[in-house]
Length: 396
Image (cartoon, rainbow, N blue to C red):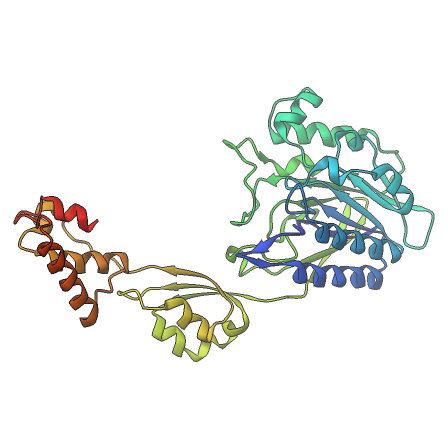
């Protein structure tokens, strides 16, 4: 049986305020062409189809169009729900859709109905898919009469799915949306682990000839027969080093051959760090000029109009971080910090503090002096020599 393994589309998601609709559309175009070119028996999508339980209409239309085109290639499509999906909404009409070759498993009842996958262009069964939707332990434990852990509910679900399989010697693909031990996480995944209860051992899915996993956004291989496809589109800067794509897998009883097909890149990611002037002048950073950028500035004094200057060279900068070097100093008391300093100096210090170390220029210092003098002429109480009186609170 030949399959394409993908997951975690998160349709409807944005990236630091930038919509990912075009990126998703480009990937889905690529997936349709790949399905047609490779003549796969089934495309399996292991959860998190949508990014939220209530997707907007345009996002629903994008999925509808993609599923129609995938089915038009002659392949079957198997979709399971993830922790971001609404199982009820995703699963609506699923029994009717099976007649067209689209199999959606979003409810527990579907676990005991393995899917027979015919060979491409044939009516003969090439293999079977046991498709497990996302199983929330606190809910599934009651339905399965098990402990409220991912390990317990997944073990029971796998047992139920395999028990329902015919004994015909054909390969079996299992689909699951969970965090398995030994895998690597990213910042963009919603945590489903509480006190270790969300971690399942890989042995839970070793009973399958191939386990097509979803939930984690980095493509990874836990064993030759247990893999995460990862998300096809990056969703956080923590994924800057990821290679996105889809697994093309040939599964036989007891053997697997897998090839990772890279997905098209809508816009690359770049993580930059350094002093502003150096970043703007560095010829090695030309690649970042067209990328979505996360920039961390390490200038001792926070530069004025920093984002404008950064975007002058890197126009797609989405995240700007200031990491001013700090020197270790001995702590001093509040009174010691204020001793011998007049109101103007304190105002200037405060301005430098809120601006990341950049104090007032000559014009600003003159304006501060005039404002303090005016306050004194009005009879506002000046600060005492020890810095403990009211005018300090006025400055706050």
